[in-house]
Length: 207
Image: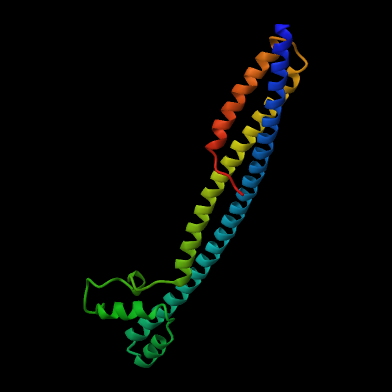
């Protein structure tokens, strides 16, 4: 009689454990899929931003090459005392080049041996494409790191899915056993469920 009562209690506990584990398995499986999708989204965004940064870097190099070419021709005109050509080139310098050129000329480079070597080392020489490229590169790095975190969360939820599925399995086969074997399986399943719940509440959820 005592064993029958114990069997009845353990059977009820098995059903409860199976129900809880089934719900938790579904939750963890859903969250793992959500984090997998988030991971893919972040990786794609990081890849796109890396591409934009590379394109911006290429444009910056081309623009710098144009500025250097105009500057060298300007110096050549000044050296030949061809003021007309020097004025012509100065008027056609790119807008991003002009502030740096004015600041460099203000240092009187022909008379001042301590003057900066060229306008390209002046703080006024800034390229919008270079600044934008740096921002895209920083964003790509941030999204890549976030994707790694999302991947870790997806793996954590997947592990919990396996744990709770294992609990359902143990609770299911316990109904085919007799005391005390089925009680041992329920105890193991209960411990595994408690462990999984502790891990679960520590993880972030996506909705």
